[in-house]
Length: 294
Image (cartoon, rainbow, N blue to C red; front, side, top):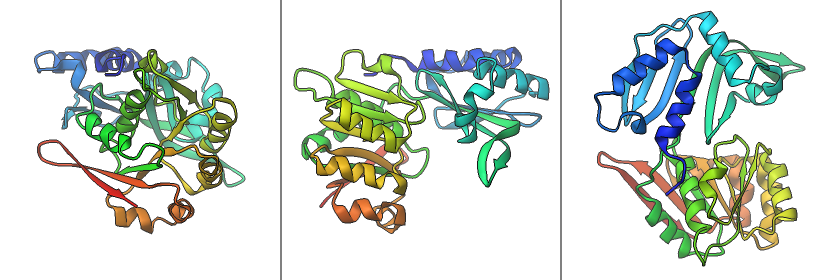
């Protein structure tokens, strides 16, 4: 079980919101079972309808956030300096700690055809990592059945790939039999306090390609984990795989056929970087894992 609770993460997110909106959320959840522990997302729209995802239910919020409130919220998220966060803002997010990534939406600015930032921020999306993963034991058993093999975890967006990776890192790196895990956390979605008693090292904020190379060169990992693998990461991944370090990665896809249809993944699939494929799908009563081995 990860050390930092969902309630603690939710309270951190609420601390950045306009006070009226924060009070409404607390009042709305005060009479519901679970309260803050069941928040999954807070979506703040400037001048529009803000909303909350509680468990799997979308709840509209009555408080309207004006331009001044939005600007103040962004200022607080960036510790008073939007310039200091220009790189992550240009990528569409702001990290605030405890593994929380705040998605940023607005009008894009380009310099020499490269996104350089976002102006007139209109939407902020606070994604609250869950404290539990109902299929973590099953996923760990799959990994144990192929120790030393590369694993690709796939699902559609929002189904639980990053959550799966968080819990799998804790499982692999725990106990006397734990192995050294290096997590390349480009978007700052892992909380180092969650792994105080594990053999898990987190390279936070590194671009995946550089992070993979640094981890392999300096951390002597037995497993490297990365979230949302892409084609630009292929050469770095293949480099460490050839050195005998297995990769556990995630990718957006709704089926194994879709995984194989993604051209960005072709170099990795053709080279045999992954021996185990785990699909996550949501059912009416929970989650279902589908496992394929090469």
